[in-house]
Image: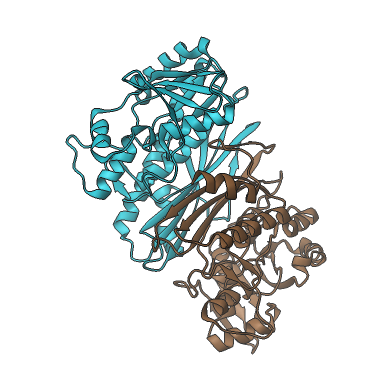
Amino acid sequence: MHSLIKDILAPSLDIKTFDDSARLRVEAESLAFTTDSYVVDPIFFPGGDIGSLAVNGTVNDLAMVGADPLFMTVGLIIEEGFELHALKEILSSMRNAADKAGVRIVAGDTKVVGKGKADRIFINTSGIGVIPVGVHISGSNARPGDRVILSGPIGNHGIAVIAEREGFKFNPPVLSDTRPLNLLSKNMLSVTKNINAMRDPTRGGLGTTLKEIAVSSGVGVLIREDAIPIEAGVRGACELLGYDPLYVANEGVLVAFVPEKDAEGVLSAMRKNPFGRNSALIGEAVAEHRGNVVLETSIGGRRLVEMLSGEQLPRIC
Amino acid sequence: MHSLIKDILAPSLDIKTFDDSARLRVEAESLAFTTDSYVVDPIFFPGGDIGSLAVNGTVNDLAMVGADPLFMTVGLIIEEGFELHALKEILSSMRNAADKAGVRIVAGDTKVVGKGKADRIFINTSGIGVIPVGVHISGSNARPGDRVILSGPIGNHGIAVIAEREGFKFNPPVLSDTRPLNLLSKNMLSVTKNINAMRDPTRGGLGTTLKEIAVSSGVGVLIREDAIPIEAGVRGACELLGYDPLYVANEGVLVAFVPEKDAEGVLSAMRKNPFGRNSALIGEAVAEHRGNVVLETSIGGRRLVEMLSGEQLPRIC
């Protein structure tokens, strides 16, 4: 155990201290703090792996409240007999993802459990970041009149993982969208601090996230189906497998509620960032339909978007 | 999943926000940040459970660098079919432990995996705390001349867990020592900020921890076996089971390296705290024997204390 941490975990992740806690210098009035465990199955999938997913996921949780991610911890639970080369590959992927996002991994922990007591590897990442003065983003702050902006096509992560798990082949393959969104959110906040609500629609997909914001903020949300970008491969896979793309998990898109006067500026800043190139205005918040999400369908009808009940795709993250 | 978090996790732990990150106000120059995953088997044992262990463990990791623990996150990985009443009991135990330590649980995450893909429940806790100005405690700061102070009897946690797991009955039962050490470390730091090294000897026990400090600090450590408090029940169990108490895990004792001039004062402050009532001076750091721990045995001999190789008792925390 000692050598697993000292010889593999610490050098792979560039962890420098071996005290019980990392010691950090932070200058901030307001800190963001978050945690997520990752149990994705399979651990390697088109476009990423459990390591990059775990780093990007926590970076994004911080970015969604407008924070600059600074530091991260990593907790590994490993099944006995898990291949060392796979562990090293995952740690190297974590390190790369952390470097790309500009976040430092400062502490780690490893537990090994017997064969059959875990499924290969589970990863927890926790992160802290600094929230700039004047930024107050929350899922309960959306206001009537806000424009709803989506940063890119939905459904890629869920379809990529399920395809790998079930052995479906798509041509071209659907890739997970796992990526850090902190620079994109920074670009947005450089236009205006008045972003009211922001979320990355992971488990439960865009539909569940919009419904949660509608309920928490006490607003209605009107969305145009035609305006929601979906890659052809994802659309085809969803039709084939019977999934509604509104409920398929994403790991690299965000949805933001921005006051009307700032929406165009934010949108054009987003489109300059490679991770926001396909950003689109997909709807708006309204005073009517409080707590509901109303979808204008492509064929002209309207339907209510409810929260996903149960998990459509288990172990997607 | 949504209802598991909203209806059980959040109210049990008193988590108030449902944004992607908690927003915290922290005033500090220097922050401590740590993480640990808990996979203890069994999850309920004499003197505690996986919930109190997970909270106290992270509180203690913060306290060992002299930090006041402030905030904590909780990540649960739950096996499908895990009993709801056990989950509620564990969450309530976490909440109680957090209240006792004066730490706030501010964010949580839950993942459910299929039957047979995890062993009932695994818990990750990550924590942040504030390190007071002038405090520089590290496992690599022990100096020749430092007195080595142990806060209480060793071996209780390991024996309590193994007894429960293997169905051994001791009379009276050996109880885990899981408890928060942050008030004890605060009492110590109120005497002097010159505590050089401090650790809670968990996995690997006191022997491994002392050896790590000897190596990291480049000092020798002389320890008197007679001075190390061990409860009669623990001593008996170790003899019966063939364990060396120096390598049995603890979850509620600390070992500190304190300059000679401050040692008596720190010791008497510790003895006034119920969790340090049985504190004892067990040895000292020396310039000779660099990187080694030398034990003066009860029968007058001397032996080197090495690091525990492998895990003596798996899944002890």
